[in-house]
Amino acid sequence: MDYDDEDLKNTISKLTDEQLVRMLTVERDEYRKEALELAEAEVKSRTIPLSEVPREISNQTDQVQGNQFNHTPDADLPTPSAQSRTSKLPWLFLATSDKELKKRISHLNEEQLVRMLTVDCGEYRKETLELAEAEVRARGMTLSEPTRGLAVPSKQDQEGHSNNTAKSPVVNLDSPFSHLRARSLPIWLFLAVILFVFSAGPSTDGRAITAGGGVLFSVVIDTAVVGWICWQCIRRNIDSPRLFGPMPRDLPTWAFVTLAIPLLALDAGTGWLTLWLRYYLILLFGSNPITNWLGSSSRIGFRLDFWIIVRTLMTVGYGPAIEETVFRGLLLHRWALKWGLKAGVLGSSLAFALIHPRPIGPFIFGLVMAVLYLRTRSLWVAIACHATYNALVVFLHTIESVKLNGALCFIVAVPAFLLFLHRYWPDQEVPLPYFDRPAGAGEAAET
Image (tube, rainbow, N blue to C red; front, side, top):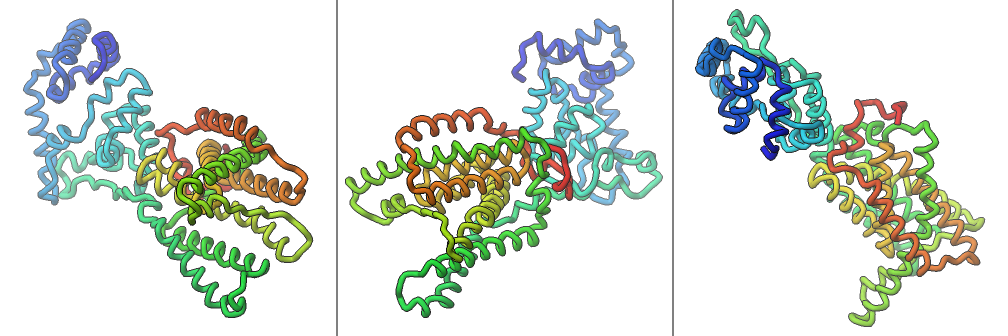
């Protein structure tokens, strides 16, 4: 332990008589010499008669507990004394603050957390168990049923009147995202492209795809993505209301949608930076697929044409919903559980950037959307902000007389959004939105 003597003394002074006696007897081997000396001094100051509870009590306790559990049908199950030595965590009692206690609980492995909330739940304070439950939710672990006290042996079992020991709850350490395979999405997209080429290729006669053909291609791709989303949710038993979260009912939460306006300046600034980067890459390496990709652009102006109207509706409504569900919903949860929250946010934002031209802006855009989702606990806010941004882009591309100064936007917008991310970046211990609410609670929960 890293506490100074004064902190340790204050912590020990807050222990009950029973905890002090147990610390100096049954669990004596779990503590440092300094902690035991301070505990003995506290016992003397309270005039607790330790002579009535000799230090050999630990052996007697182990023997009694061992006799109580001799009826277990599982030969490989360790005796309670062995379990207490390996799984009980008495050092949690010595945490000096809730923050320190939360940090210590975050370092426990999954087996220790499950046992702490089941077999050993009687050993811990209510606040400690609540922090442990929050950590379980943050890791995406699920317990099959409410577990406090569930695995504590009944009185009948303790007295040996039953041939069965108390049954431990069925514990499922897998979350719905544990077996989600992000690499299957490119396979679906590849099959969709093959299907489109074989169905539309002969009619194009080798010429460039028409405006209608381009929209149909986008429809095929988006349909494949929707199919992948549905397949993953059904196959992995992902509860979509929990994934999307509640529909916010307060204006301050919806105010985050107005970030779409400064995001336009961010796009102009990062676009200017990308063009300069492309220019220097061409000077160094010549024209190549990477420089061509960096120089590509997707201008989506609006006019009264059937296919343009369809494309605009997809850009403003259909596309944001699909992209936010994939990148901020499924992939963020999957990679955050696998590699940690920071890696999940960065990884999902990078994947989002790679499917867009001029990827620097989309990468920061993805970070902002991930932070919005984690802060508001609602995917609806991110979808609304994304849709508003796309609508503004269509409007600006339609009115070609409006031009944004890329250099000025870069100087103002990029630092501003970096400060925004620094301020609102979620704590590593914040639970993912899916695990922050009960099943079926996505429709009308409060924010």
